[in-house]
Amino acid sequence: MKIKYLLFLLVCFQVLACKKDAKPAPAPVTTTQPTQTPQPTLSLLQQYGLGTTLNAAVSLNKSYDFYFDQFDGSSYESINCGPTVTTMALKWADSTFSKKPVDARNAIPESGGWWYTTDIGAYLKSDQINFMTVPFTNATADSVVKYSLDHHNLVILCIDMYYVAYNPTSAQHTNKFYYTYNTGWGHFLLIKGYKQVDGNMFYEIYDPYSDHQTYPDNSLKGKDRYYLNTDITAGTNVWWQYAIVLAPKGQQVSVAQSSGLTTSSLSHIPVARGQ
Image (tube, rainbow, N blue to C red; front, side, top):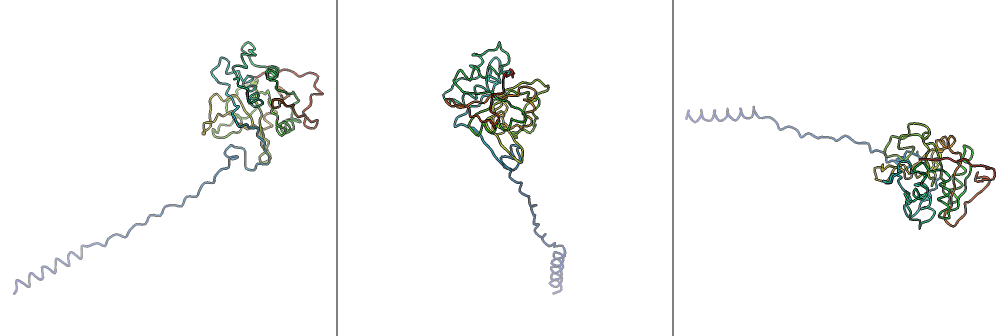
């Protein structure tokens, strides 16, 4: 009987010891993820670096591509802006035009040098494209661009690109995307549209100097580039204060005295050139 009592006490002691050592299970830990503020979606205007509010816009686009990169592997690619811009203009004006910038260079070689403004006119004439040369100054520039594009005419400029600001932001479409280290950087540009955004006037330009540089979407950087009107006139004021305005094939250039599109006061138009 005493042995059974001792065994009973031993069992009770072991049970009490186990209860004393037992630890409660830890409470489940709830992890709360921090709330992330969604980033605002930028409009296309903002992505391009143009601004916020679009007030007016015109783009003389076509159902086909008429942009050319002057860096095409030909012998004079680095100074071929004149032949390239004129080829783009001809392709826009005449959908059947199938020649390339190298063909323009071969037609008017200029001994392998820069093309002149007179070469632009001569090559437009070779495909019977009507054009006229008009004053392009601070006072007339916006009128010439708006009136011409509103009436379905393109504009070709010869400009010192040193005066156009540089934009290092790769994805944006505003300002220059290449360096010009010194003045005297003569260059031809094709204006094929405009955008008025937040009180600023941007010319929508085909700049032939892409040199294979592309945006994140793989389109060439010279396509639909937007340059401020004040930068453009700063460059034309010191280089060539005129513009070549051209019409679609078979049509005449639309003119109006109020637009600045008149040659009546021009007794002599100086010659300029671009690379």
